[in-house]
Length: 436
Image 1 (spheres, rainbow, N blue to C red):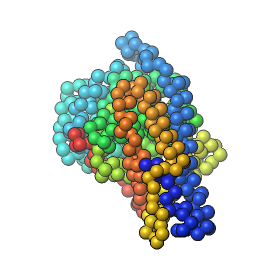
Image 2: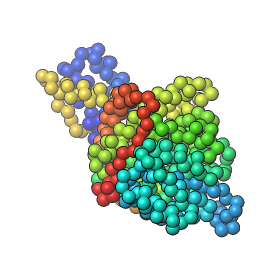
Image 3: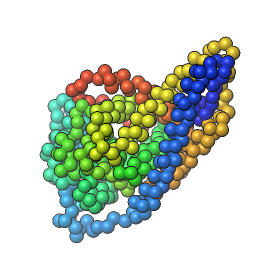
Image 4: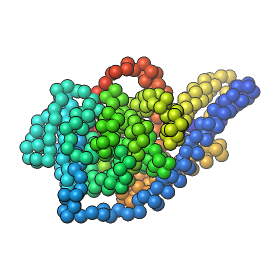
């Protein structure tokens, strides 16, 4: 796998196919394609290990919910829903079992065309802590969150997806982190994959640990996060109002709100003990659509706030900006090198590609496998069966690196041509082969 991606020189460096000048021009691209994932893997492993050592030693909640009922602030849990009739009962049932004693749940039906509205009204009649808000038409997740934020009574607002099952301690862990400092504007939780019956589902178990989990841990060590996880994120009401709440135009409202909060001086942190069990796509089509939306949203944020990040006062945002820009550049470099390799293979006397990796290919493959192992060991504290999926993650580079690369390349022209002012409305996502 590593030799196919960046390890094999194949015919790109073959003197029979390229002039010396062309080879010298391509050499920096070739090494960038190798060194970017190699260096960042070690940065993420080191940062993740340090974060786990410093912040994740204890898993004991330090409060008595019964005696502290009047002293712990209200949390408004917001659940935006679009066609969630299949999942919403289970989601609400989990929320009702939360360990935190002082909360309300606002269920926002954003123009659903199934039985979501009827189910929400029924649930609200059974529990006074629940309230339902109905939008007549599909206006998008950000509008649903904004509507609930205006109606919320809580000092903290927790947003979760309409198919997310929260751990009973998740709310309490996030409130504890919020109360440690008045400068914390948002806390993001630790989403875990619950549909693991297919190869794509099992690979994403490793992905959420080896990239998403490790990256958030590493970024927290230098003080800024690229994004909260929109599936579970708690916000300080004061911070939300200061930045104008969620942006209805952003395809990834979670990335957008994270950057705006941090540009205003608010801290955004990661709480690994705030667990949330989520459904992810288990078809290539569903996975591509999801990652394309993520890529477009990331590029929107990169271009929209590049001017603000350039200010010397925002120097803490520079590592986040540079790392994401480097990842976008890597996608285009890889795309160019792969296209060139395909073209050169058709030339007379072309060198046939080898699947035996050169030393740098083998080194990258070993580093990738080590990164996945380190991440699974760290997250195993919260998800006991993680190591059993290690064997499935060997397919991760070819499956997800290639998908991410193509999504980034395709996303750039889509983002450029996207009309300003256009709202990001809901579409029904791929929830896995057994949860559709």
